[in-house]
Amino acid sequence: MDFAAFDVTDLLLFIGAGFIAQLLDGALGMAFGVISTTLLLSMGVPPAAASAGVHTVETFTTAVSAGSHVAHRNVEWKLFFRLAIPGIIGGVIGAYVLSSIDAGTVKPFILAYLATIGVYLVYRAIRYPPQHKPARFVEPLGLVGGFLDAAGGGGWGPVVTGNLLVQGADPRRTIGTVNTVEFFLTASISAAFITTLGWQAFTVATLGLLIGGVAAAPFAAVVAKRARPRVLLALVGSVLTLTGIYGIVAAVI
Image 1 (cartoon, one colour):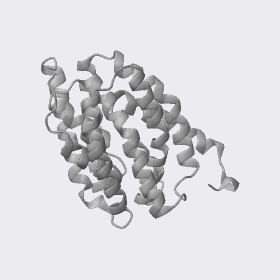
Image 2 (tube, helix red, strand yellow):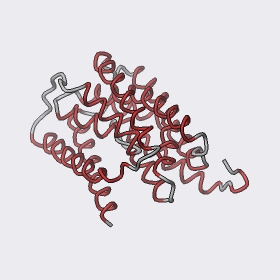
Image 3 (cartoon, one colour):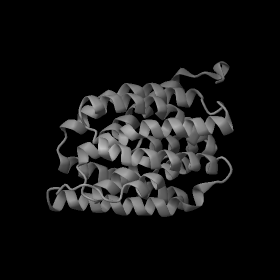
């Protein structure tokens, strides 16, 4: 970090962005990686460095978030173990791939897929109350979600949470479980990035995101616990739809 060029105004901006991003992520099971990575990329940070910086920050924010979700009993432990191992494997592979290859070419297709899931979740929230049932397609989902999270700079929450909810999983426990697994995923991805890129990705931007994210994490778990399932479904669907459409437009323009 270049302390000679340290700007308090910039730090406060990133603290605010980190707080909002983590509040959404902890409450809805997604958004921190997408928002933070988009912000860094818009500043001209290379994709690998942006993903490395965001995952370094998420190692700390997801630790606080995971502890909060466990304390509020938002975690389904059987689902946790089914997601954790394939998710970590996919994340480490994705980190090494991004360090040598730009995975941006497939990103618009992934965003279109997530936007479609988002529209369907909003429809489900409006048309009828959720009918919960255990998710069946889990391990492959964890593997793909972990890979896309590392290679695309974010995606674990949108891919995994969105798909589990489509399968009928309970929103509160799905969000809490996905956030708890994310700590172990981000720690593994960060270690892989540090091995290949070193510590140069840790800047004033990542420091600000870290402070804001850690501050927001405890509040987000409370929101996930107290919000009604139908509201959570609608919010998750809306976030998926909006981020998907925004990403597609940004990629085309």
